Length: 189
Image (cartoon, rainbow, N blue to C red):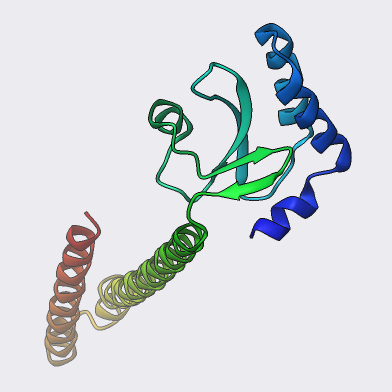
């Protein structure tokens, strides 16, 4: 990690850090520090200005996966990483690596949970669609029996009784699917 950070810091930035350490005027230190911060582009790290015990500015880096926030680091003066003209200093490299591993594991778990939830939603939607399809089929069958089959046999009581029995069965099936649909709708809520 240290080598990776050092490789991302250009010689111009290190020259600016030397200039920052030599400068005693705090306003000029702020200008130099802002230039350094703007020049630093290190993945997973956020550069910021920090103050030492004498009030001089130095550059620190906050690890994006760290529980330390920049404001907290400024108050406690415990920085994940700080940069001087001598090099890069890491407070606890093993801890920082572990934080990233934990973060990646959390992201992986959240992704798996989201994927499982999406699968469940798709499954529920398919069941909902199947019930709707069957309900539509039986409603069409009922309409056919009531509007076309029954009128054809006016006067033929035997046939009408059979059709009426079939209509009753289809109505029962429709009620079953309507209840299933109500249950699915309640489950969605």
